[in-house]
Length: 65
Image 1 (cartoon, rainbow, N blue to C red):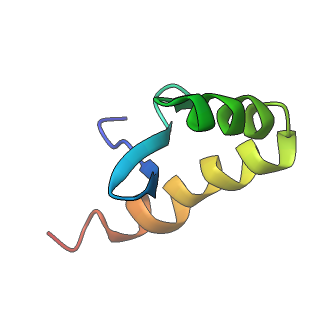
Image 2 (image 1 turned 120 degrees about the vertical axis):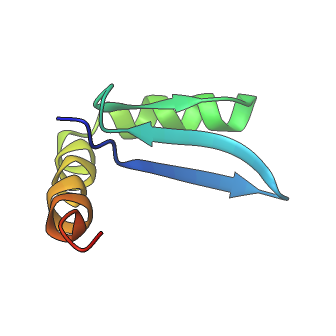
């Protein structure tokens, strides 16, 4: 439960949106990011895909260190 998966979207070196597995949704940081976050959060398949990546990337590799 201490593992958090974070996926960030950038445009021109500026973070516009981020998915956090602890929140279970996207958060937008710019006008474009907020619009995209709303769109992505309304798509259950997108949220399920990002939530599954925690299992795929994080939990699979946690024992390596």
